[in-house]
Length: 94
Image 1: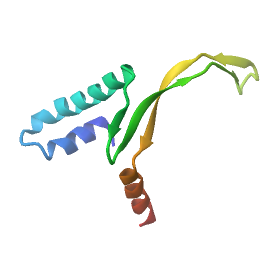
Image 2: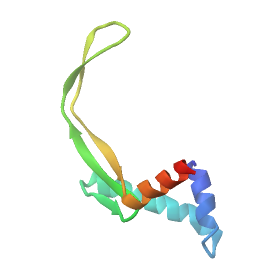
Image 3: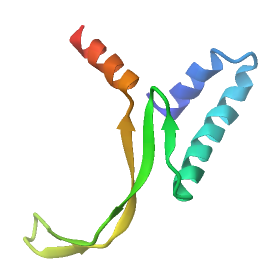
Image 4: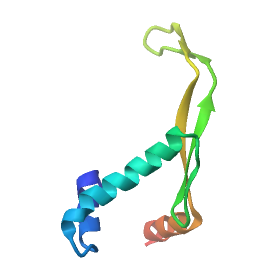
């Protein structure tokens, strides 16, 4: 599913389908703003978004066998919630 398909699904449950795109955009922006601010975003039953610090490390370029320094950076981690895990597990067992 991509963003356009998500907007289409959200529009099915709104009284005014034109509000679906701003609603999805607003939700995604709120999650992004919270993560940029260092907050954790917990969506009960769905999962948790949080940031993590990666330290600088040395990696190897597989094409040239040359060592490359990967700088320290901040990344985003997602941990699925129990309800999401269980739903995916049930779907895959069918």
